[in-house]
Length: 215
Length: 338
Image 1 (cartoon, rainbow over the protein chains, first blue to last red):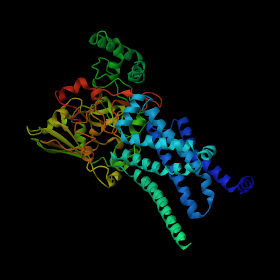
Image 2 (image 1 turned 90 degrees about the vertical axis):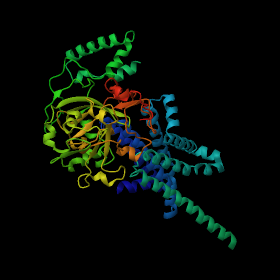
Image 3 (image 1 turned 120 degrees about the vertical axis):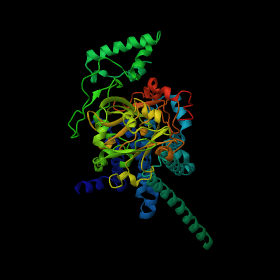
Image 4 (image 1 turned 60 degrees about the vertical axis):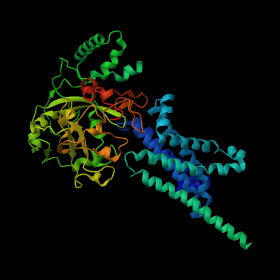
């Protein structure tokens, strides 16, 4: 209790939330380091790290996409303060996921990688998603945002295209074995978050239209 | 070349006395050198891939788990069909399994297969046979002398193990029922009981899990009817009490917990073929040249051996058993019959 009151005296609520989020998003990585040090990655460490990094990328993406709806629902701007941290951790885990494929699975062999990208559409989709993610991460710092000016917002709306690519990547991967027990609910969640945004934009548009008529 | 050599060279030191394997190795090297004049550098690969060794230095006792498991021991004699590669650790063999009747995660079977009842157990032998019959598991266990067969196991997903199975050639059982001239294929049906198998709720596959072999494949001396591994009866998650082991085909061909064997004239439709005909064929022979539609089959990761940063090892034609089984497919287009 004393710690919280101390922290609120030292930090603003948004800073406190940021600290909390950084602690939460670093948990999976800290867990990996622990598991690796204890040799507890199981019989197939490559499979474990690839799947785990993929799952955490999804978690971070869903969390990032939830911040705007949460802002609308709760009426506080606090959430927007941590959206960037969540987006960057999505990039971090997405990059580890891509690295698991390139390094552990393909041995960084350019020929093998090119062949894999061509013959496995879900790999190509994942790579496209990672490219978008990298562009978003690169244009995330304040100076990049300032330089991009008005173009920043439309650029960062491509997170929705990214989410669709990620859903397709995951579903396609699982399609071969008809196993949608995990990919199904995750895809549903991401699509629900996308629909929320589309609907919200429509409702706002409608309100704006009505407002201008009355004015 | 150097990394290939390292990857394919088995660490025999862990299974056999140094003196013995050194003798065996020099024997093999001289053998391969004589077979492949001018290709001395290939001898290491031939050794790693190597195939059944009719070595005179067969070891005396079978491999056992490092710790007691509570499972019944099963006596067996060593077999000249065993590979000299380092066996995958007991822990990995019994904890990393595909047995979808108990869930689709690799950890599920070890966690959930406790509910499987392995006694009483019978196999019904029927179809195009002169002597259809139902055989009890205790009779099956005594039908032929038990052998330890240390085989490579290559999963279609791109990983592999080396497993010390216990069992005897399936041909011993088949001869007992006397297949008729109409018996061209053998179909294996496995247990599908919702009470015992929580994975049956999933619609990933149609149950019961069904597999099939051509009669000549089923009669091949490498094709094993297995009752155990690591010197003991099969753990439930590995397909207790009786399963098939076909070492030159992808692992899913080796049906687990078999309850019926049917002899038929027409090629059966196995479960994976029914579920995804474009991805899984009837033959499913290990073949580095025929890619799975969603991944290459050219290489594999040996569980417990190939670490995070080591290169995957090359997959061998017919999983390294080409000398024994290639003749079964002479003249066949293995791309078409994948």
